[in-house]
Amino acid sequence: MLAAAIVQAIEAAGVLFAAILAAVETASGHAYQTASGVAITLIGVGMAILLAAVARGLRRARRWTRTPAVLTQLFLGIVAVYLLQSGRLDWGIPAIVLAVAGIAALLAPASLALLTPGRVEKS
Image (cartoon, rainbow, N blue to C red; front, top):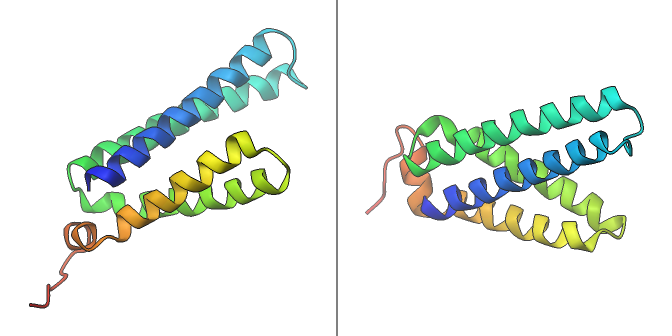
């Protein structure tokens, strides 16, 4: 569970970093439109907060975190493929590594046992 929580926390930090970059670009006048730059910044900060909440829930083995954590990894994997196809290896490679590590940590037997309600372990 700790590995899944760490991956989720790293992803939250990455989204926050991207939101800060968007804020800097907007403040310096480099955004396509100021309103969209502000909106992207606010959405990014909000998502970073939500991802951090999921990471905290994973660390505490809360069952509600399973679905948002898996969806985060799937979404990040899709975004990573898009980044790799567009030649953004600097963002795409770390993104795909995090997505694979996150899904592997969530599908590990110990994580499944903690996050799946009513799961009966076979001995």
